[in-house]
Length: 413
Picture 1 (cartoon, rainbow, N blue to C red):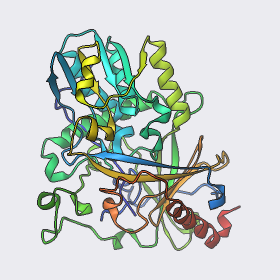
Picture 2 (picture 1 turned 90 degrees about the horizontal axis):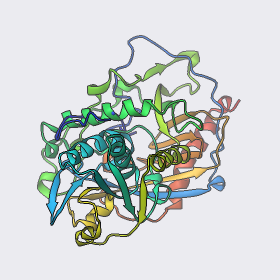
Picture 3 (picture 1 turned 180 degrees about the horizontal axis):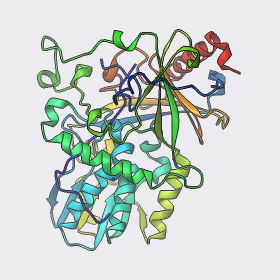
């Protein structure tokens, strides 16, 4: 399976106090197990894992940079452009912490009016943090959040999912990662319990055919190509992960065994996973932005020269993968990811991960993703910019869970 787990921090520009092939054992699973402790599994009712129930297939291109997100500032004519893009598969998870850094950088310009380019999750959280810090904010964007690449994502807490390569990010980046992760986690907690459950925790069960002690540990193979020799990631072990840095605040994964195991013969671990319900959460954030006096201008940008038409002198640039063309940033590498969506099933309140596929039951539908169907680990989708749905891939992922529930009919209950 695959990592998709923890998170990071550290102060490249300082925190603005004005206003938080590796095997995926489970998101947040790099936290230590509780020694000798087993957890009783709740009764699991199977979801309708059928390809003829697909309502939508979404494809996103995660904006990966080997050195980690771009958070620097540069002068462009009479403008100061503060970049905030390149978060790989960790954009949702690190959005608040990354925005906090970008706004802190903007505060040094001593301008009261601020422009944000882009209204994906990075742009929108940057705008909100700026408002809380006293800026008058205008978002310039082609699309509002519901129509951006952001909402084609998985929608769960994955703060170090292809966030950087260990060597290329350098020794100081883990501190920056931890700062972003902790700030984001604390901010997300403020949204728990809101109407519509924009943010919530879900029991997530990670299943494996192998005992945990049989899962091989991986390191970079010096005899094989790497990013340093080719300019592209070549091995899963090159990707960075620092879950131990925030294990004090993330619920630990715990084993389920014996009669409590709903999948006899499989190794099962459960943890509480934070998820984002896109509809409710996006509506809440946009409402907050407008209620605080924010403005949105629908505009498309093609080159940096177009930024000269923006009246504000301080700009936070949040274009996501589009920065590859807009800002000619060839350091951005696409990482393709696809999710299939089935009708919502409110009586199914859990998630599963098994054999390279994941399922999350969310308020806006049951999300099924094939994150490692071909056993490529973190290399899955790297360099793939094909942004059209692949129904065969969706059916393969759904088929894994259909087969699982056929093998364990007692789970159906």
